[in-house]
Length: 310
Image (cartoon, rainbow, N blue to C red; front, side, top):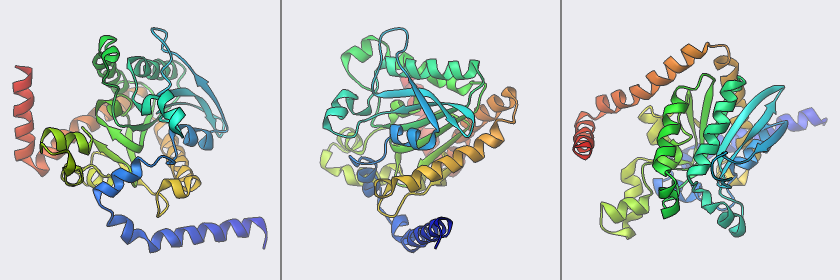
């Protein structure tokens, strides 16, 4: 058997295995997805970037305060196409986790991401974002240096970038920390990733007054890729190996790469004006969809936000 045939057979075997376990995967609970998204050996943004790119050069610093290790930015090439990559970085072990602040960025991390995005816009490079964070860092120093302003500015600027922007939630997509690099033309989630306004533990502590109810909170929050695909908040789900992305990282990396290449071939042909118009319409349609699916919930949320503003 030659190499090409062996590669074909191995691919078919992998697809058959995934098909045979699809039902079990779809039946996975929200809490199980939360645990899988937090796996210590789950592939990180750095892994996917280096697997996808032919070459990659990391960029450092925000030109204001410092270099946040919890955010990785740089320029890579894919089949001769230059692409800017931005991603949350947690670390692969305890030492790296501490160094990267467990993926929780400070304001300088979001300003570094914005610097990379604006540079990409200047040189007409598409932007790819990998999201994997429990949230932005809530410390005193972060507040003093303007973490809220940094995230809000990113929301505004990413919404109107004049180049294609693709975002992938590869693990935890937590709160404003995820939104800070999560605005784009298309938003994807890995099969076992989660996306929510707060962690299940935080939800249980604040609303249920019982931290031990985190599992029940995860089910109620509708934070899995299946839930968010149903709500039409994300475009599609990227498949993982049956046991999770950490059991076969190359399979998921290849699926992400194929998605990027397919979307960029399409989006790079559109004018900047059309890109921005489509992106803004997509963002506005999220509330329209949620309101049409559950108008009572949407109205209550609007009332709460109105009271907060007053």
